[in-house]
Length: 496
Image (cartoon, rainbow, N blue to C red; front, side, top):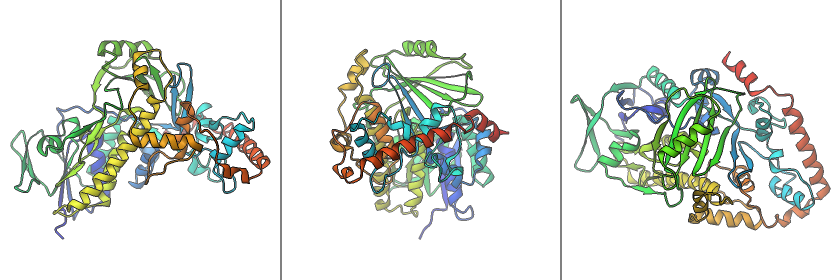
């Protein structure tokens, strides 16, 4: 069998320690040693302060106490993302987590809502989203503790301090036997068959391994530099390539959602944590200089800075291969899609999830790597398409950036998805996708894309039943949310 007896993780930060934590949880320490190499001289970018719901499930599967994690990472709860000024300058819409409505009989809720709109019903789609209604009133309660209630289909994620999250995962990993080595990788030595044999640190230390995880960030020391795997550039689809970020004091109430506000050459994020707020401006260098971006960010901040703004350049795309020979690339070493939908940490976790699913022996059968690369590529393309939709459907013409967004070429997969939806609200379902129908429906609706008709099969249900169900469901959600604790009240109970 030649099982892997040692896995070497190169690089720390969120990606490195998340990889180490997941591997250590699933692999017996007496069978497989895990060693992580990182240098204190190399700072971490700390992207991904906002997460998506699968991250909560991951924390639970690792046996981590949610309350302890929230206390340690300065975390708050997240019910979705509020988009301000994306379709038109004065528009606002919400992308919620969890369900929107429930099937009416055997009929899809969205189709029933579409028919109701043709009959004069003025209810907004988001009136039937528990997450949207909770977010709108600043309230929160975990749906897992309210099953079979009007908010039982909701979902949530976390806002976290990325550096504190990495420190937490480091403690978790080291307590379970992951060995950390301080050092800077200066050389990567390969065998005659192309596999990595060992790495060399600046002090001359040689570290051998059966398998290597490249978490060295955008430097991609193993996958890019040593193995020569090229990157696929998606800048033709997504114009933003830089961000300027800053931490600010916490002012006002702690809202349970991320805010993404469109600006002249991109968009600004606002991520509330317990003790501070993360704010930043994602922009395109074609239309905005670093100095102008910094000025725009500082002008729109709603509280005082606690550190200096820093510019973070990035390239949207991914490695042509995420797994080659006995090396896997995770995080920025594998690829990056701008932070609009907070998918960075999710894609890191997916990378390790799939690796565990196709876990190799020392021979690293190429068939396993091919399937892994296919699945990871599909995940990246799904996220890419979803984010491109936010830009390409805009009607804004008040700046050169937004005008250029309207001219962006659409990936064929996104174009087909849009056309299918426009026909009669049908969805193109993939395999184990992150963004389900409610996410696509929310963004389509928010960006002004509507189906030309509803499915004629809905005519087989009495409209009076649809009308009564919608009225009851809308009132039930609003009525229950009204009596829930505020986000701050619930959070105070969690952190003691």
